[in-house]
Amino acid sequence: MTDFNATLTRAFAEAHEPADDGFVRRVAHRIERREKAALWLLSAQGVGIAAAAAAIVYGLMPLFGVFGPELLADAGLEVARAHGALTQASSINLTTMAAGLTQVLFAVGALAGGALVYRTSQQ
Image (cartoon, rainbow, N blue to C red):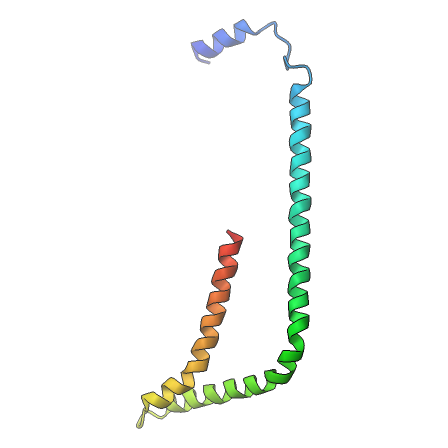
């Protein structure tokens, strides 16, 4: 113990602990109430975001039902075209390969962008 700490201990030896007679408890109670309120607010925001996401997905389901099979078929054909261009080593045609990879690269870019937005919103 340093001399400064020893002097403080001797100076306040007869003081009651805590000297504020309830102030610390009132402050602790107020902080606890604010933390609980913040937790409830965070929970309410999470439920609201989940409800909004569910509403958006529910609203887009008819659109996916109409265009989904066609988009999946087109994506499959583009992947097959890109695979064919890559496997034919004797006649690599960059135009065919670029046309085949266009939709694949768009999909990968969209997924990467979504992951970036999610990560940024979590920080």
